[in-house]
Image (cartoon, rainbow, N blue to C red; front, top):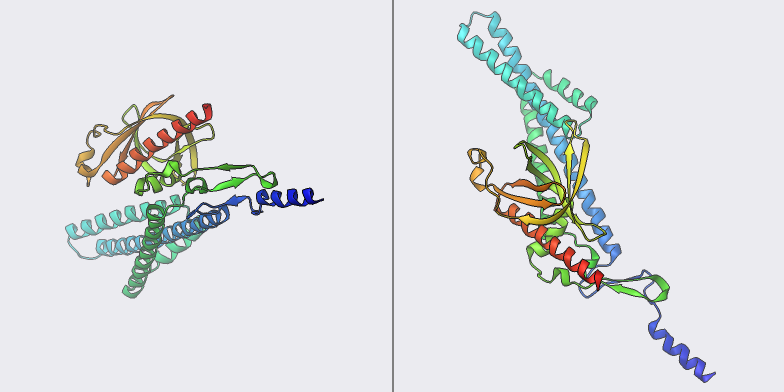
Length: 323
């Protein structure tokens, strides 16, 4: 009986005292906490998108009001005794305002605005005539734009400065329940604890819009993201958006190399900020080199250095798996 008591006492040293199955490393996060933070970030992103949508609808309303007033002014000038040059100017302004309003409405619809709601806002805006009503519409649109910019800046700050890192990168040990076996994920992949080392994987996995050049020199906007799949391959995923805002195409390619110093695309230096633009390529197995444009040097470094880190990490994981 004494032997049994001693044996039972010794077994308690290895008993699983963490029913959740997750033991955070020093300074790390539990899976539950990480999931909660991810959920909050998703809510913030949704709020930012809704704010941008509201701002787009408000601007479309202002543009519609200006177009309606310009059209009314042009109609009155055509029927009055004004000189022909002034009448033609009024007609040109009305035509330009109508074009701008149509583009604003189309942009709002492409962002996901409901047609009924958009039609209601535009219908109310075109009936505006007094200066006070126009000032009210303008102030509301300006407030919506500021709110959208604030929420967007907050979301970007969360990504760039305190990007959510998966628990495995923070050294979390995950246990397989009551059998006591565990798998320890060391923090070696984040050994260089600098900006790119912390944020690049999250940024690249979320993705963003980049301008892509095809083999025929056509330019298309793509929603680009890069990540490591379950087979330790670095995957380039590109999505194309339909004009109505829905995602219609999705293409995936295996990345094998990064070309950091791509030559500038012809004619792009003539655009505003063209001298700041940078270019890189991702060499894939099936499509060869896929070229992208970055707005500035910082964005270029995030993508090129980030994908290079993913390739190194994937190679290291594959090597460990073979051993």
